[in-house]
Image (cartoon, rainbow, N blue to C red; front, side):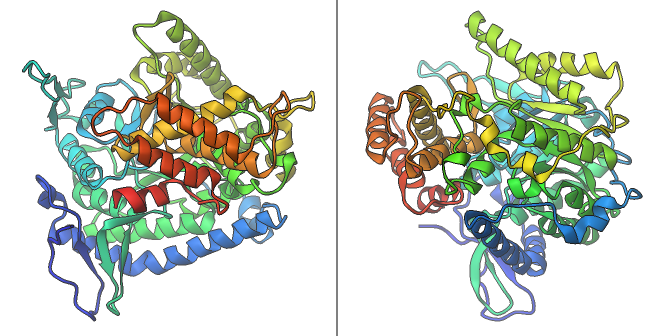
Length: 565
């Protein structure tokens, strides 16, 4: 049973209304103020219908690819691509975004917020999306943590030990203890994607029709409403990462949201800066157009490698063996179709004055295991040296211990410069066929590249991540890797594709539904059943999203609707 903490919605109004249906919590009223809810309602009035239309367009384009019509560069937007005269705002007039060599990512709960701000990174991707489980507590609690951190007053006490030992105290110690944002990583907030809803807030339109609120508008709106003026006063924002875009029209929608939001709170147009994650296959064909639509508010693009790989698998999952990828561990950033994607991103960004940000290093060091650390550091060094050598201006890591490793590789190439926008990459020529050459990742010996170990790893990672997500932890360290929703999507999507394409392992054993079911049972039996565990629920979700005939476009949607809403 939920509790409404706002007045009931009228049947007909001049404007829409937003009603809180989630359970009240400590200090929630500081975030869910009447003024903030009115601001959210105004955003929904202006943009919710366009959001629906764009999501419908996504479905149409997915059906086209399934029917054999490949994505391509749009002929109608060629004039934008061919016009050399325009650039994006970039980092000009955006203090704290000039130098972004290493960005750390993580959710916005108080402990992780403090750890990120103490990390020494150049920027912190404050993640309300793939690294966060969207429980109501996390949604509002994350806003509270950011609100307090921006004002230099965030502290956190861990849970006391069973013997009564007090919990660990966490506070910001970097800089001057958080009082001056200039001494801390620049906060870049990532709201949830356009496809997601927030069911603890109900929007009722002018005609009295209720529906769940847009998670994108809720996350962006609450953060912006409460913090934009404070961030401007402190010289550090407001800045955003935009996830899961599938084309330039979705970027245009975000730009219009920015324009209205700045007008409503009375800050100068162009104050917002956004970095767009290119993490879907359709967006790879519209990078330049996305930059153009956001040009007055755009800082750059990011190569969201794991979500991009998920998008490729999802797009071509029904197109036959030619598009079946081998084990996830074998699809590295050096395979030709992934290389084409990152080369195009760097060249596109630098042509338009935008930062090109590299992808996530998901390795998690183990301070008690030198052998694991040695392997992780070597792999991260190689990955970051490649990115810096390719012209990227910065990169992501998931753990503070990797910051110095990544920074060393970028400083070796940049030589003290804050970026390498002057490196234009005129030699890069990427065609549609290069981006779609999925078969280039398959082994040259004609085998599938799928192993029994890879199959089991996908089942294990998928279930263990979902179990963590259902408990409210959206960034989970599993087998020395930081897994989030994107990597779980790869795991379950590969299994769906392998089963439906009758893929065999390298040794010729068919991957069948029955074989996957047996692995699910084995993995579930091996997991500890600690108090509050969600193993059975995780198994149910994984079985649905990996084995059902109808493929859910995102695993988080059914999981959220059934268990978190």
